[in-house]
Image (cartoon, rainbow, N blue to C red; front, side, top):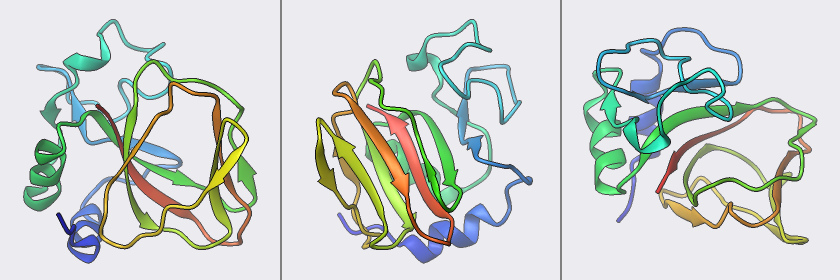
Length: 146
């Protein structure tokens, strides 16, 4: 399935301002786009409960649903940054929107690059991994649990 990255980027322009992450899905009855960010430490809900679309993003929400994603968010990685080496509880689906050859994942000590080419990538983030943006530009992905 080819994903129209430009269409998603246009829809995302409608989102409120955010720094590094903003949720695209939440739990029923909660419309805070920052509820559930991080290790769900600010949430009393399980990841699987985050299935309600927060914004009227017709195309983006369709892609999220087609990919079976939940607790989906937009993640902006600032230039010259790196995440800790960690494991997640579930695998993650990534849809790269803005990236370049200086952005990479390291999963169990192997380097991977995921281009913004209209594909979604199932990444086994239950393995030790990190993401690196060694460029001078933001890296933007849609990320959801699967």
